[in-house]
Length: 270
Ligand code: AG3
Image (spheres, rainbow, N blue to C red):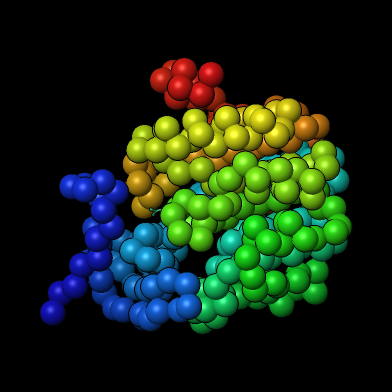
């Protein structure tokens, strides 16, 4: 039987791909996990019916999540990743001489499944890495130490991930950061502009500098995605560091260009 995977981005539009093979399908305590192999996108991780990444375009999302803040911060030594149990963001962070990276993932099964089917498992073996299985919102409430950069590599703002977009969470993140940098994925400007407006107003209540940037991601809703950069001390416009040499997407030019928003997005986010 020819099977197709579909994700609906609205009630009548979305993305589909023919499934070559189902590699893993099951339910964890938190969500449905599906790993498929496809001709066009390679292997794909799908959580609760939503595409998390594909082997073909994962580099765009993860390079653009990680490198802008890394190239701006004066000396990133301690990093916290919330979500990102697939290890892709972690893999990018570890390309820098950081001292300690804590990754807080809610779903142990995501880490296990990704270590089995994708190639970033090695990142978890690095001695600078501490993996915490737990709730990121609780973690930032209770953690004592300071970190330089926090990355929120979450699922869409439904269910457990919803709290990762709340003002209270941003206040706790701010505490943990001091004058460091928060970067979070913030959905599609095409489909979720009101949601992004909400994120902006919550973050500007907490941080001095709040800037959105966007990148094309072929397999996400709208084929186009946004991130937010928030900090009291830093702005994204002062780039201080060369990126690692082995990247495929990020350059300083792309960094600067990504913060330039189309007119209607700029107007919505005024
Ligand atoms: N995090 C963002 C995925 C959101 C995609 N949404 C969707 N397909 N509806 C990805 C985590 C990968 N590390």
